[in-house]
Image 1 (cartoon, helix red, strand yellow):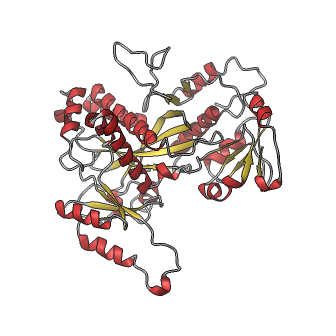
Image 2 (cartoon, one colour; image 1 turned 45 degrees about the vertical axis):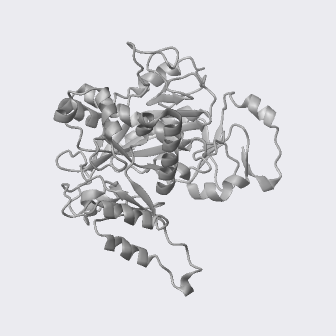
Length: 466
């Protein structure tokens, strides 16, 4: 159960730990959201919703509750909540860049420059206004390129703008200066200024990015699962750099695109990631696509490792992250198909500090601690239902799993204090002489069949929601 610490509740941690893995007949849950996750929780066999101040075993909370209540709430061993205490180290745009830069320097010291280039998947970024002068220095080195300004703690495309003139940032900075009678007001909002990827890979002339889901159950040791489903989010207007003020061209957020005058809610603006992978395979070949998706795996793992030592890895916490990935246009048959991984390594060695002149395929745009669970279509609703059901299977409040599973529903275990192999047996077992990661992003998600096999040995009274 969970209670406010001020209530004077005392429990026996040893007793609770002994009981933690035993099956539970009734799970009491609370949910701060009223979208897909609430539907899934209410449908789950043996789960009962509690209201207001009732005691609970599982809470799908929002980050505001976490910030205000986590440190004042007593939790028994079995209790789970859906955020880590300082999740913002990964999900705030300024903190993730700071952590990735620090981690890159650490890798360079310990393993050399070549290994450190595996962290070069985020564009040149400056925190504003604190790094304003550093930004100006960089801006003047490369006149004429496009930059993008993003508020560090907002979502759904709010507050974002593109610019090429320093005057635009000077005006923004002036707007943030407060007079004497404003000094007691809310602090000026922080932004990041980031090199804009001017050469995105286009489909049908339109820009898109990928939303991919990663579930982290622990940071120490790091245990992370990758979901097979996801989607590509398309802009509603053909891409051009001649109109940098048009958000319908440059921002792929569904919250932005659905306000476009010619937006068609029946068609939407998403492709399922299986369709996207099939499209790329037909156009560029399976080998190129395998390399592309392997580089995405690198982004997921390196970003998580960059915050592994700063995230408070509380045993009560798990987190479902939404990764936003952009692919650039250097994924071309003429540039890629005749080259192997050694070519990729040599390119990384020649790469610059920023992305100008680089040949890099995947870019990390941001990581979301609260990826949208509101569906934009029936297909989107079904995807999120599958995702959330399988998330709850892994959280395993019922205590049914052995802890040795490598696949649960649509999730594949990609990291368990080290890389996980697709092969049976040890995590470092080679496949045909080379390691193959246990990731299947964009592959067929035959989750119902897998779940039936996984849970077939359960007693008949323990129903499983597939």
